[in-house]
Amino acid sequence: MSLIILQYNVPVKFNSYIIGRIIESSRNRASRSSDRAYWEQDFFHPCREPNQRKRKELIAIMEASEYLGMESLVELTTQSIANYLKGKNPLTIRSFWKVEGDLTAEEEAKALAMGVAAWRN
Image (cartoon, rainbow, N blue to C red; front, side, top):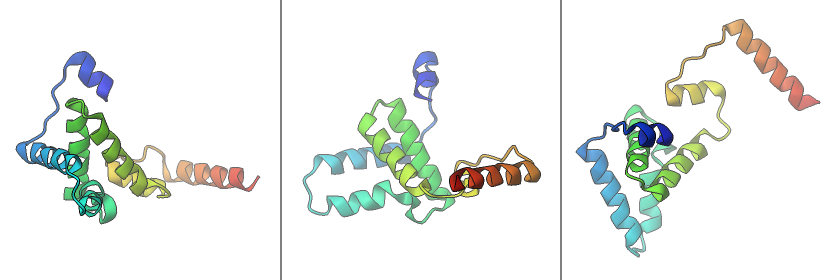
């Protein structure tokens, strides 16, 4: 996504709430507060209890920080998403990203069987 944004100068839509969250994150990361770890756990892991608002917020923060060139924030948000999706089944991953499956039920069952057989060998 970053290549498309930078190459074609496509603006990313994000609102003042998302900018506020990015500023809040930057301020917290700059501080040496003792509760920083707890704050980061809450801020960067909204997937802990996934719901539509938190999922959208995390993705918006990731996209906005990518657009703004804030690589460390991009890494933290993508790692948070990766940690949540680790070990999840394809249905959960598709649901998180709002991607519809393009396989028929028969094709999906065949692919699943092939995957199970590959792990057994």
